[in-house]
Length: 175
Image (cartoon, rainbow, N blue to C red; front, side, top):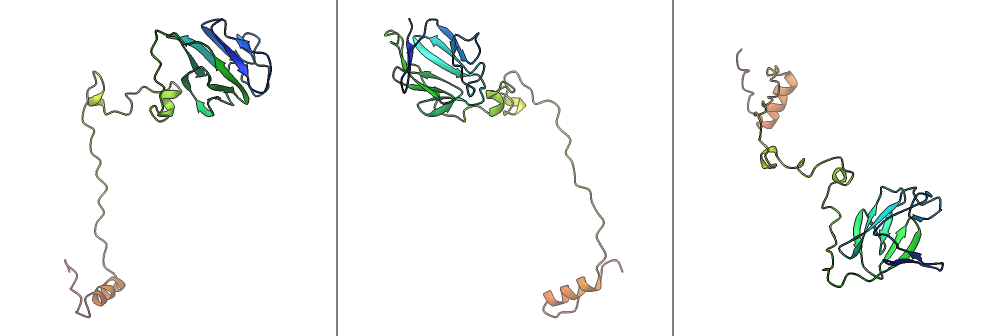
């Protein structure tokens, strides 16, 4: 046995018998949680370097570790993991020779598109800064359309007269 999940609030412990486990509502999952708020394929658990790695599988109600919703992270012995609203304490003995994994504490380190697997991390960079990227041909500059100057109305000339402290308005140019 590679560890176990101890249900918070009572119940039988769930043994972690394989280094890769699928948690979900389907009978084909390694750990079946037959609750309507648990997705059919909710979370994967994988023993990596002597520590359990947890990855949420785009479940509707999410996976939380120690009260924080996660996409993926490592769990330590004694951490709490919740699949939707069903919470467990993680119990296992880490590999004593393996260094503890570093948790990614910055939830904004990846864009939402990258987390969904729809974008590469290079998309935000200019082409010249991408590996092997070229800036490509220069883009043509777009100039705003020019409009001919409008003819001044009597109101425009009266406003100029007021703005110039009563000095006579300048005669229109080109007349």
